[in-house]
Structures are given as C-alpha cells and as structure tokens.
Length: 254
Image 1: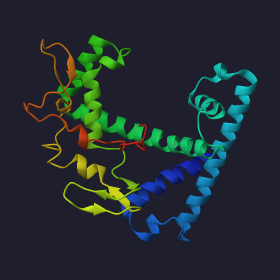
Image 2 (image 1 turned 60 degrees about the vertical axis):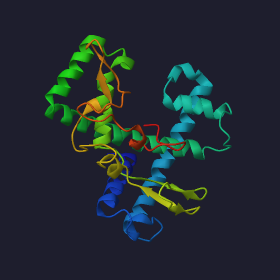
Image 3 (image 1 turned 180 degrees about the vertical axis):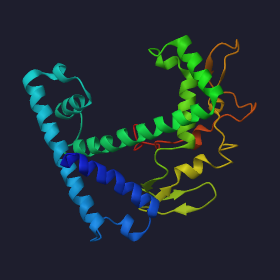
Image 4 (image 1 turned 90 degrees about the horizontal axis):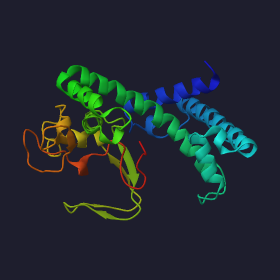
C-alpha cells in the first residue's frame, strides 16, 4: 500500500474510532492535544494534502498544454473554474479543502449507502420487485423517471444517514420556536440520526417504507413523488426533518 493510501486509510479509521469511542471526549474532540493519534492524524492529513496539491498542479499543467477537453473530469472542471476567476480566493487552499473533503465524503458515504441499500432491498422483496419493474419499464438511461428507486434511496438515507451528526457555529443569536435562545458563536451539535428516527418526524421510524416519499400514479402505472398529506398506510415523509447530507448554504453536495 502506498504512503498516500495508508494515510487515507488511517484518517478514515481514525474518525470512525473517535466517533465510536465518544466524539465529545477531550482527547477525541481536540486535535491539538499532544496524543499519539493526533500526531499521526496531523502527519497523515499533511501527506494527503500534499498529494492533492501535486495533483492540482499536474492537472493545471495538463490543461495549459493540452486543453480541458483532453481530461474532462471533475478535477479539470475545478481547476478551470478556479483559474478563470469564478471564485474569490487568490490561493489554492479552498480548492485543496474541497478536494480533500470530496475524497472522504465521496468514497465512504457512497459505499455505505450502497451497502445498506442492497441490504434493505434484499430483506424487503416487495421493494426490490418494484425497483426492478420500474427499471425494466423506464430504463437506466432515464434517471429522472426512476421515481420509486429515488424514493428507495431516500428512505435508505433516512434510516442510515452516512453522517449521524453534524455541527454549525451560530453567526448570530438564534431564537427557537420553544423560546430557547442560542447565543452567537456557539457550536451546535445537530443529531441527524436522532432526528431521522424521531417518531414525531417519521412515524414508525424503524420501518423501511419508500412509500413515505412516493406514491402510485392515478392510473396505477408508475410512480410519482408524494405530495399529498393524506396519511394512507403511512404519513408522507417530512422533508423539513430530512437532511442526510446536512442542509443550508454549507450542506454537503452529497
């Protein structure tokens, strides 16, 4: 295994270890503490960032030499947008931050969601059959019309959100509906998993029900996104309480 792969593997395992053993414990939460794990984390992150910086420079040179059409991928698009002045940054720091985030978020979240999705379909044959029927009828090329499949993925993300919590720092004082006030500059932990599994937000929260999000067309052929609030066999999914990839201006692109 290369040094970069080892660094990536350590950082992935390290964040999982910190979350499982207690994310708010001082030696897990504060990366500045002089522990062996924190030192290794800093070294691994520095190595990974240096690899990303080298990749950016290599691609930037290739774009200058051969043009963007030669390598029309995500990294090329990022470099083009950055060098064209579409961003307000005058160094590569933001670009490196974005690409490092995508390395972790794009790899782990996708594999976890696919694994849980296959598990849920394997244990719920009626949902599996509905997905297969829709794919046969619509075709994989027409992703916009794979409505039941989209509802299935959304339900998987509700039950098994890739990130079970997130945080935000308040930029101004915030008054909640119950009258509680959060001061400015406070780090707020948002428990995504708990919100997704709250009975008030999603009745029968442990049940795998893609029909929270989709419903049969009136003619019985195909599916549409569910908009009606009639409860039927289960209430309509609560979009305001669903944020598997966080939400707002700083939400993860997923």
